[in-house]
Image: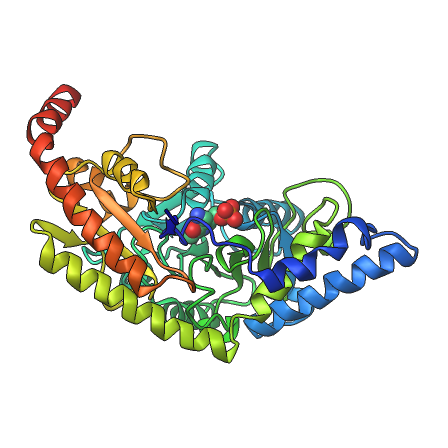
Amino acid sequence: MKQIYLDHGATTPVDKKVLASMLPYFSEKYGNAMSLHEFGNEANKALEKARKSAADFFGADKEEIIFTSGATESNNLVVKGVLRAYYDNIRSNLPKISSNLRVPHIITTAFEHHCVLDACKAAQKENLAEVTFIKPNKEGIIFTEDVKKAIKPNTILVSVMYVNNEIGTVQPIAEIGKLIKNYNSKLPITNYKLLFHTDATQAINYFNCNVNKLGVDLLSMSAHKIYGPKGVGALYIRKGTAIKQVMDGGGQEGGKRAGTHNVPGIVGLGTAISMINDQGTKNKKNEILKLRNYLIDKILKEIPKTRLNGSKIKRSPNNANFSFQNVEGESLLIMLDAEGIAASTGSACSSGSLSPSHVLLSLGMKAEEAHGSLRLTLGKNTTKKEIEYTISKLKNIIEKLRKVSGNVLGDYYQAKK
Ligand code: PMP
């Protein structure tokens, strides 16, 4: 039986064109991009070509793109690097900077990916920052007005994800960008500029990521969500942004990210990102949206006591996330897997832990509801046949699980209380 892959939110297969572009950089063109000889030049040229592709995609300058090991690193660099720059600045410019010497303030959301959330929590624990975690509404949307209300004189960073990785909801990044631009324009010149970051990891395939349209100073992405390789990503850093490297070592990436470049990976990222706006890919987006809507409508209609988590409209075209009453997410995944269907509950990074999804809890769901969620994320090769098969199997599995779950789940939650 052919496996059906409906977990593109976790990772995507490397596109054949992407792979072909990477291959020569393993064993033939294997130079270190920093070396001062022909091998190095060759690798460096490839690196700069990839940087140009990423810069073009984001409407940025080449110098504003740095390569990292993925979105986890990009996001950590944002939170930690902005704080590091702030403290260095404060120390060296004490008399000039009017910004008071209070601990700086960061605004983020309660349903960010753990790499942002935990970096913020760590900074809070170490007394390096105070943090406000804004809650989304029940539909999984952050209100610009709530960001506005949360800004304080010592706020130095706002970080709001573009598309949520679990429920696929789309946040009003351009609107928040305008708010922050307006706020900064009224600040005295000596004040610390409020920076705006978005984690666009799940947005790149489907949404406009022009950094000027969005009004962001920092934007994170990862190659393996866009049919590129794992372990490589990028960070857009607007010129003049106060951020310091957090990894000490060589002077790679303009001193912002030490470590020998992953040349094949970066080449793959460049090819993958340059393919996103192909005409063919654009058509695929509509196909994916149609298939996904069909999936949502059919499941809601045919499986009782089911709900869609997150707004149906302000949502990434490839994401569907359901809660099935009296069904436990892990059992559902195992049974789907036995039928050859790969899906996820919560995000791939969090599964393995039995704690309920922080994303669903942030929408106001109860722990037992948050346990029974299923995320199906479509990709460019998903077919109608696969969706039909998934729906029919899902119906049977949910029925079976509900037959046994009443008692078992009841005991489980009773024991947890
Ligand atoms: N942010 C978001 C929104 C993500 O979906 C992911 C991957 N699940 C990450 C960050 C982490 O990316 P990476 O796997 O490249 O570290």
